[in-house]
Each structure stands twice: as C-alpha cells, then as structure tokens.
Image (cartoon, rainbow, N blue to C red):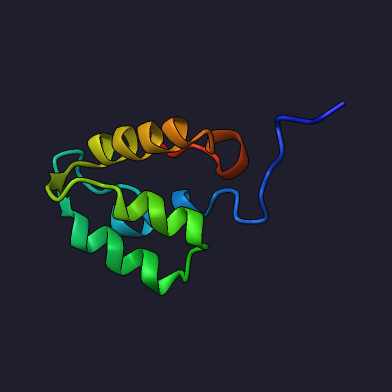
Length: 88
C-alpha cells in the first residue's frame, strides 16, 4: 500500500523561512514583501519545490498571517502540504 503521508527531508523548511521573516514576538501588524521572503529563502537554500512555492507568491506586502495563508494555499494546490508541512 502506498503511503500518502510522505514527509520530505525538507519538511518544515518553509516554517523556518516564515519565522526568519517574522521573528516570534513581532507585532501582528508587521509586514514583509515577497522580496523579503525570496531573499530569506535563498539564504536557506531551499529545494527546488520550495523555491517554486516562494516564487509563486504574488508580489505584494504581507502580514505574517496573510503570508502563511498564501504559502499554505500554494502547498495545498500543488499537493505538497503533507510532504513539506504547512506554516503558521
């Protein structure tokens, strides 16, 4: 039987990116741009699939919650949520 709950070795890497862009304790009104997220993703040298997720973000300004919602939507749309994990 095929296990559909496969976890990649890169599971949780997008959460690291989100936490780096929005440090714990930062105001919920703080914002970041797609460029901020892309830059942080490059520093973490994400795998190709996760770079694709970051690149798929619309160019805009994000609060942490809006960024998480957008990333999770992209992950679910690609069917990668269980492999790479969602973000919060």
